[in-house]
Structure formats: C-alpha cells, structure tokens
Image 1: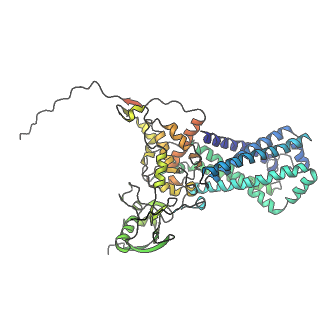
Image 2: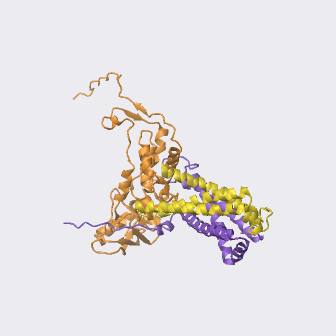
Image 3: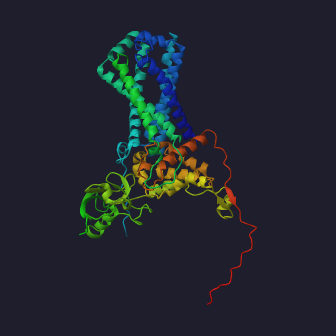
Length: 117
Length: 149
Length: 273
C-alpha cells in the first residue's frame, strides 16, 4: 500500500500548505484587507523582523517541507502519465528524491542562518 | 496467408488532457487544477531562489531585488499566481473530499436517463467555485486599496 | 419517399492499414427516416455506397457494447444514438480515441480486456476448496446487492476509456473500466479477493492516477458511473493503508438442505387420454 500512503501524505501536505500559506497570505499579501497592521511586509525591516522570530521560522520550514513534497509528488504524477517504462519512472523517482532533499536542505538553512545572525 | 497488421496507435496524447470531446465542467476543472499546479510550482522555484539566494546576501541585495520586482510585468504575474493559488487550493479541497468518497452518496440503480454521482453532487462543486470567486475578489480588493500583492 | 425524409452527410474516418499511411475522412450522403440511428446509417452506407467500410455491430440495441464510436465529438454507442438527437445535418463518425485502430471504425479493445483481466474480475472464494467443488450457496441481502449492482452493468464498450484524460496520455493506466470493475468485485460481499485486487490498483498506473474528471461517468451508455466506483475504491484503499478495514461478517452461506420434506406425489391426471 506504499503508493496509497504516499498519496495520503500528498493530501495531508495539501492541507498543511493551505494552513501555512493561508497565514503567509493573510500577513503578507492581504495586509490591507485584513488590516494586519504591517504596511510594507516586503521591506527589509519587516522581513528581518519575521526572520528572527522562531515562530515564523518554524512556519516557513514546515511550509517548505509540505510545499516541496506536494509539488514534487504532483509533478511526478504528471510525468508518470507521460512515461511508458518502469525504468523511466524509477529514474524520475530518484531524481526527485535527491532534488527534494537538496532543495529542502538549502532552503531551510537560509531562515535558520538569518535567525541566528 | 494474411499479413499480420499491427493496429495503429490512436492516443489523444497530452492534447487529450485539454480537450477530448464535448464533456462537462468537471473535466475542465481537472485541467485547470493541473495548469494552476504547474504554474504554482514554477513560481515557487523562482520564489525560493528570491528568498534564499537573494535574502542571504543582505539588505542591499534584498532591496535591489524588491526594486527589480516592482516591474508591472511581475505585478501581473503575481496576481496570476494569487489567482492560481486560490483556484488550486479550493478545487484541491473539493478533490480531497470527493476523491476519498465522502459526500458522494451511494451507488444507485441506473434508471434512464442516467445520472452520475458527480453531477448529482454538482452543488458541492458550485459551493467551492463560489468561494473561489469570493477569494479572488478579496485578493484583487487588497491590490486595489494599495496593499502588497 | 416517406414523410420527414431528409438527408444527412456522414463524414466517416477511413483507414485501411494495407493501403493508407494515415486516416482520412470520407463523405457519404444518407437519406434519413424518423427513428434512424447512426448505426442504421452506417449499415446503409456499407450495403449501398461502400462495402469496404469496417465497423463492429451486433445486438443493435445497446447491450453488447460493440458499436462504441466517437460521433460528433462525443463517444457514444452508434445503435443507441438517433440521427435526429444530434440535431445536425453533418454526422462525423470516428473510431473511439485511446484505443488502437484496426481498420476504419473498428478499434482494438484487447488492451482494455488485458487490464480488466489483471484486476481479477471474478468472485474469489472465501473457502479455496469451493473453487473446484461448490457445495454452498451464498446469500445476499438487497442492501448488499445494491452496493455493487450499478457497477455490474458494464458492457465493456470502451467508451469510458475514450473519455478519460489520463487514458489519453498514459497507455498503462488501468482505466475507468478496470478500476470500476475492481471496486465492483471488492464491494461484493461474496468476494474475498480485495487484498489481491488492491495490490494491482495500488500501482503507479492505478487508481491514484484518476483525477476525477468525471468524463467516464458522463459518457457511459449504461449509467454504470465508474467515477463513483473509483472514488469508493480510493476510500477502500485509504482504509486499508491506514490499518485495515473492519472484518466484515461472513456472508450467509446457505448449506445443502438436509431435512428435506418428502416430495408431494403428483396427483393423477384428470384429463383422460
């Protein structure tokens, strides 16, 4: 039942993205409508302010995990529907696993490094 | 002796994802979901580049990046990304509910003219489309009243 | 000439593997009468205009599944579609997409049958000894029958596969027909083969490549609703992946009756020979 469990994780990560991206959207991209008080969320000060708060770092890293898994699994599904051989699918699987790990490692390092500064 | 004839492949291919006949709404919601998903993936790649490589280089590089991105082309792109996000999230929520078989009802003995569960539960789809429209208006409103997008 | 006589133009896709390098369209003019089906028109063409036209037909009443074709941009049974229903002076008839073409309008449905076979479309007995020596009768309540009855009306016409967008690009996708039938057997209370079938549907080209486009259910000529079957199958697969379904009560078995009352003797004939 491995494929089913992977798909369920895909659905769970979708819910996770909806929650954390919802928070991200509410604070940074719906700031006027929801009156969150932050006039310029993309300014350096505002951004650094968030980067140094542990709560935000946790939210960003969780969003990263869910986003990478959901995005790469979805893309893998689309690619599977275009391939004919099992070998091609196995190759794609490995490429995505490696790419996902590298992407996560790099993108998780940045907010932690910024928070530590 | 008859020659063996190999049947000719007749797949619609990837074009078949977009159009394969005069089908109803849900088949097009599927391709919209796929297109928005790919669009979001593309955006996330660029966004991760911007928030890692650009951010880690310090304030001056960050502010230069923000200036570069203040271009109207990128603003329109960001609106499209916001729309894609709203559509993909809400259609995805509908898919999670319906794909796992919830709220789909029970099998019914087919009596002509036939109906199917997805069409019988069209109201659920319509509720999600209504929420999509409302959220799109909220996002555009935020842009109009001068907020970031 | 009967009343309401009009004529329509049939644009039929032709492909002779021994002569043509690619399919092409050919036009025929067919006189119509009230109640004429697309199949009637094709038979008229074959009998009077061009006898080389190849297509499948058998029951001409929508139950054998032979005459599935792509008619005016929608997959239908030719025998089940009235010319008048299409409300068009032009009838475009092509073979069903997503199945290889043998000749003209006849497609190779063997891939569909192979996928159907792979999901074990038969009752797997609870007691293995019963497979060779049936001694008991299974009993089902009407509610148990209703769980799978709708999906048992599949006539294997291949129209759902023609409609499915995943089948359009993925030749190895099991398809709505096989997946729907996998659920039909898994949800049958007499069957004990769920775990074997779910292993087949839990593959890279199995149930999770279905994305609920719903075109299969929309176009199914018998109202089988394979989309519902696939979503219920996904529900079953989810429950199994998360820790197994509740063990269902064994199906009532009606044993060989032992205490048979003696037969009532037939009364003598009253009519004299």
